[in-house]
Length: 152
Image 1 (cartoon, helix red, strand yellow):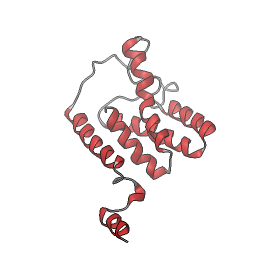
Image 2: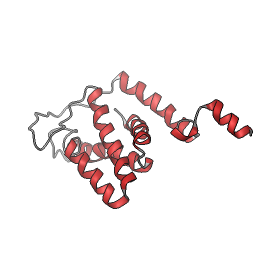
Image 3: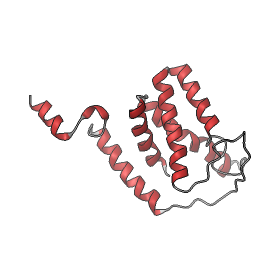
Image 4: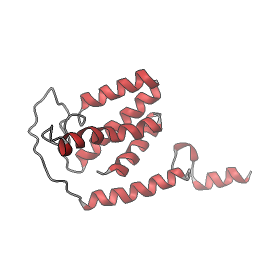
């Protein structure tokens, strides 16, 4: 999945967990911000989904956010980071969920852009645009309810 898809899924998950949306946005990008440069630029890891694409890294980043920013920040990072891993796995990516406790054979692969990823990016972009307009948050209610509330 690409960045907008990760961001949208993180915000939806964070809303459900009552997490901080800014922390969720950051958490949704952490795995790729760590792993892509390590694999593609520095050639330091065997895959672009390795060091930060696992449950221990998710737990660590969530714990650090909790300690530094409180419970809402911890839930936001958890929502963002975990939704990132699940979205990558759902779209056919190989995720080393239990690394470093379990060994995984990970190979360097070429970046492939699939139609489902592009479709998700378009839908995510629309969702994020609507959210910025105030139409997609849990508190906003239905469009009918909002128009009724603003009319009174």
